[in-house]
Structure formats: structure tokens, C-alpha cells
Length: 454
Length: 129
Image 1: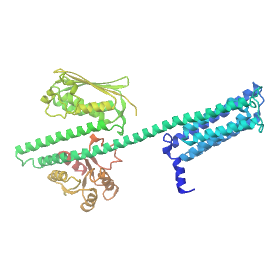
Image 2 (image 1 turned 180 degrees about the horizontal axis):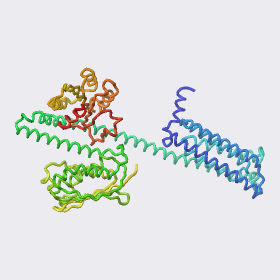
Image 3 (image 1 turned 180 degrees about the vertical axis):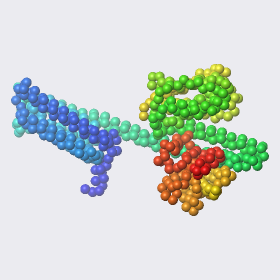
Image 4 (image 1 turned 90 degrees about the horizontal axis):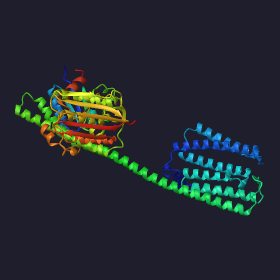
């Protein structure tokens, strides 16, 4: 065989032709077919007992049992080879399955022969093999199996009809020697076999083609996501690096020459440093928001305890609250609430909401923080007595860069990205965020996130 | 006490100068290298007491390769390494020194910019001062 042919032969068995199969799936199919064969052998054996004992039909039971025993013995060998050989190559598994089906067809033909030939409707069992081969194999294999079925059954009927081999009568009225009955059954059988093969292979071809397209698109999506991650990391580096250098230089100069600098210059340097910090914060939040919107599939999730994250975040925000003498009134679920996600995401949601509540609440006020689990949903609620959001602005607060006029007046700097980011994260977890607010009375933000397992 | 020598391996020369200013004002001697290869040469020739190492230089993970080489060489494995990066959590690029200890053979992992006081404090801590 030339190298070209060898390549062609190997390509035939390449996984591309069987996009829905792999060695693991095929192995499970092998195990499944072995179990099915045990059932078939046992069922047929019981049927022969019934026909002999209850119906007293005279059939060559010894031959039938020899065929059944041989099939059982072969099945034992298949079973043993599956136990011994843990790993088969993909082409080997395909060839093994072909051999199994061909041997099964020969055994079935022998059983039909010894059980009444054309008179026994058990020949309909051939259809199972055609359906199975159409599911397992692509292109020509199911057609070859169907043709083999037709050849085997037609040969059997021909040999019995012409008296070349014996015919074992199942009924008192024999139909095997009626030309009309034989021709009629064979025509119907012929049509049934090829139509079954055609329907199954056509359906499977459509399924395989769709699967191939979906797999290809899925691969492209994963690649695109990876590409986006690389882009965001690059953009993050390139956008932040100059600002980091500016801020580090300003801070270095301020720190190193603090004693010798004119207070006015020192103040200007510190202001410049503060503005570069603000720019860095905007860049970071903008990058994070874009990333959360664009990259969803390859984020690594892990088991996280939401209550622990909430407690950690509250601890981190306590200092800001204490500076304004704000009381954080906690009503938290005491149990561990495990879900699937990223620590940073939940920290960002809680941190932003708590931080906003503190920033926009008056001194000496109270902020109520509540968490609970209801119907497999984690619910977080934060209620402040701050400036509140006017009705005509409330629908805009989750938009990028939007800051309510009253918020701008009260707190000079804010990126206007925090709540957009919170909303995006919550939505990425299939959750919801809502807000109720009254000017000068305060706002209540409520986050509902479904609890998932990893 | 002899002056401790700090090697900064970072391709951003302005950032190196800013850190140099901070560290020299705190009494440290600073040497620098602009890429991983030169950095490894400087480790041999300059015998630093501590290394500040950037992650993303020529390639996105050059700093990690340099860190592995430092920690896998018995002559340099004891030198404390402070790893710094401009690529932060916002891109999903996050590490935890405790959690990723096997993966990250460094003493500290920080996101830039580093506040001068924090930088001095960390350098002193890792030098056992």
C-alpha cells in the first residue's frame, strides 16, 4: 500500500469524521453493546425455552443453543478485552465495533434459520443493527451493513426456498415455499432496510454537520475570548504604565525632597499625584468594565463563601465609616453560603455599594446592611440615609460615567463607573440589582444572585 | 551597617528612576537592568541583596521566567524578590502570594504604582531590617 493510501486510510478514521465521538464515548458504546448482547442472548434463550415447553414447537434447539453459547462466549471475550485493554486507539475501536456488528449479523442469520427462517418475524431485529451502525459510523459503513443484512437474509430465504438448506417450520401452515409470500416479505424487508438506513444516516449527517459547525464556532469563540484577554492585558499595561511612571515620579520627589521643597510646590506635586491616582482608578474601572462585558467564558471560577467575602469587605470599609462616625447596622445570614464564582467579583460588588453608601451619607448616620438566602438566591441589601437619587436620574445611575448632580456636589471625584461595573458583574452571575431612593431620605440597593455549585 | 544593594529589573526607565529616587533617599544603593537577560547578568556581577522585578517586559511573562531562574539557582535562590506588575486585577490577572506560592517563587507580589513608604517598608522587611 502506498504512503498516500495509508494516509487516506488513516484520515478515514480521523476524529474530524466523527466529531461527536471520541475514544471515551466509543468505549462506553462498546460496553453498552456488550450489555445489550447479554440481554439479547438471555432473552433469546428464554424464548426458545418457552417455545419448546409451552408451545411444543419442534425446532433444532441444540443448534440454536450452540449459536447462543458461541455468541455468549464471544461476548465474554469482548468483555475481557475491554477489562484488560483499558485504552483503545480510535481506529481500533471503530474496527472492533464493525467486527462485533458483522458477527452479530451472522449469528442472527443463523438463529433466524434455526427458528423458522422467513416465518419468524425475528428478522426485524436486523433493523436494530442498521440503526446502531448509522448512529456510530458515517458515510459508507451503514450502507455496507444494510447491504450485508440484505445479502444474508436474501441468501437464507433463497437457500431455504430452493431446498438447498433445511427449513425448520415454525407454524403448521408453511409460508416459506409460497413464492408470493416470500417475494412480498423480501420486497418489504428490502425497502425497510434501506429506508431505515437512509433516514438514520441522513439524520446523523445533519446532526454531525451541525455539531461540526457548532464545535468550530465554539473553538473560534474561545480563541476570540483568549485574544480579548491578551488585548486587555496589553491595553492595561500600555495605558497604565505612563500614569504609573508619572505618579511614582511625583511621589518619589515628594517623599525624597519633602523637607527642602517650597510648601506651594509640594502642594502642587501632591495635587498632581492625586489626579494621576484618579486617572489610574478610571483606567482600571474602565478596563474592568470592558473586560467583564467582553470576556465571559474563560474566567476561572471556584467555590467561594459569599458571607466571608461580605464580612471581609465590611471590615475593609469600617475605617471609612468610622471617619464619618457612621454606624454599620448588620443583619447578616450566619451560615456559610457557598457558590461558584470569583472572590474579586463579589468583593467589587459589596465594596462599591458599601463605599457609595458611606460616601453619600451624612456624618453620624446609620447604614443598614442585610444578607439572606431565599429560594436558592443570595440577597444583599444596603440601605442608607444619604442624599438619595432624584426620580429623573435614577434610571441613569447604572450608565457609564453617569454621576447624579447631587453626588457631584457632595463628592468631588468619582469615576461614574462603579455602579455600571457592579451591574455588569451581577448580570454575569445571572443576578439582578435594583434601587429604591428618595431625595434627602436615602437609597436602598438590593442585589439578588442565584447560588450555583461548581 | 553596610549599604544594601537593590537591583530593579524593569523596562520602564522612568519608573526605575522614580524608584531609585525613593530607595536612594532611604539609604539604599540601586542598580538596574532593562530586561530579564541583563537582569540575570547584573545579579551575577552586582550581587544585589534584593531584587525588584517587573512581570511584563519583552514578553508578557518575562518576569516569571527570570523569577524561576533566580529561585532555581542555588547561588541566587536566597535573594528576596519583590515582583511588581502594571497589569492588575481588572484584566483577571490576579495572584495571591499565599495561594499561588508554588507557582509564584517570589517573596512579594504587588500591583504598581507602589507608594514610596510601602516600598521602603517592604524592602526593609525582606532584608530583615
